[in-house]
Length: 116
Image 1 (cartoon, rainbow, N blue to C red):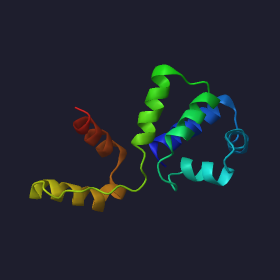
Image 2 (cartoon, rainbow, N blue to C red):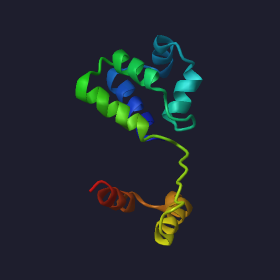
Image 3 (cartoon, rainbow, N blue to C red):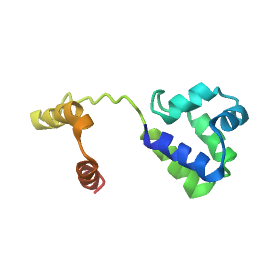
């Protein structure tokens, strides 16, 4: 699940909206919306993100935050380390190799370092 997908699911739950209801209102299939929530589809278009904001009546800073979250929710990332140091390439490869086995505490520590 992507951060964007998790947030959309949380918004739906808080407001008591089913996946089918939301999909019907946005004129997308419920299968697509489910795949988007579960990270099985790529990053949503900016137009869909804005439709979702309008649907949930999200404005200003919260809408901008949702757009940024969508931008950071690619379920399949390609990291281009060409031109970087061997250490940078090693970090990218180790992370790709071990990401599935990292516990939440380790992920939290990595986020702290990366968000500085």
